[in-house]
Length: 576
Image 1: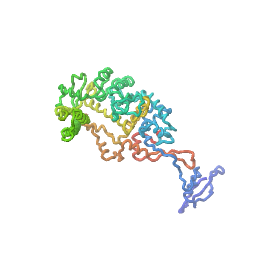
Image 2: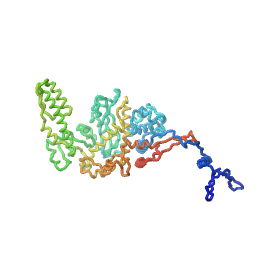
Image 3: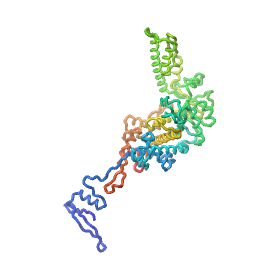
């Protein structure tokens, strides 16, 4: 049976319920019922019923929404991870899937392993990652076991990343940071220089290797009391043995690549380096006459040589903006220290209850001058009933003469890397510092660490590095939508000198001022873009015809979501 609308000249069409049948080899039809008087909704219901559908009761919805998960941000991060080399090293079995889930969760919602287990469990999932990966129920013990599985594969994963991002003769950026731990039982924990301003807490030290563009390649965890230069030995062995790179230029700051490390490890290992001189070494160059400050009357960069650094090039740079800032800061600290010392002078000279005693006066003076580290700039005279101070004007002037001056040292010949390239390479260390900011602050929250066992701490740190590896690729691809400079080539072309501050390109400045992209879309930070993508949901619905069967449907993409997935070359519906 079927319903047919038969034209009726100038009258409304006749709505007929008909039946087809075969007679003498011919197909014929006959009318069973005239439905012309039926309401259109009832006719539509009958038509759907005849086609195998279900007629809904009045007020009954055609679909029932059973569950809605935020999905767009999961699709963006997971889809990006799927396209990277690291994903191919994570096996399809349960531990590899859990590691994938923890990498994505660390980017979207960094939390403890207990909280992450709740987010990844199907019954308590906070987003679509659990159903997309088919995780089922997850507990924290499974995540700990997955961390143990991951740390065993760290050397192999780092080797693949190095093979992809590092080549022979390339620059390798290296820097060190630290993070504090909770508890006292981890064998890696120790007291050392705290970069988190928590000197009373135990900590770990970790060194990060990055490619020249800032892409993280490898990370190593050390005892919390390890000095920065001491970490270099493990990195040299990793570069030479595990990564098998024939020639590498290691870029590190002056506190990392010291003269002792150069003599004992870098030169014997046949590695080149780019680093900077310390302030006393620069002062020595000036005093010996090897460095003439008059060189910078009309330029900001010059190459020199010195007998104390045989076989090396010294590229001397002077940044006037940095010089002005250092002078301003010094003057402010001197003025503040003088104010505190003047209060002590007044206390010693007052008529009523004056400050007396060499020890008492010395104690207060020490607090005043050490608070801002200004002891080297003052001459102090203390007696039982007297206190005077004066500025060391000659020493202050000598220090001011070196404001904004820094010297980069390298044995790399000019034919391989010119002076501007050496300066640019050294300033690329800011990309490693950016990685540490992402690891330690609101992006990935590597700290605080609650793990009690050393291998678990190493696994946690490595997991955070892998999450930043994915974030680095996300930022690179989504730069047109973010407050990132997506036209760095134009910006570099406008830069008068590698010593000068890196400018923003015109396109980036327009985004900063207008808050809109060239397409008229709103500019985002990475996390606000994740929040926007999260409104693209994965919805599970049922129908009255088959209430036991769940269907998955997705809404229409907004313009910003459509642009995001175009830049990532990801289909959010097919991300599995």
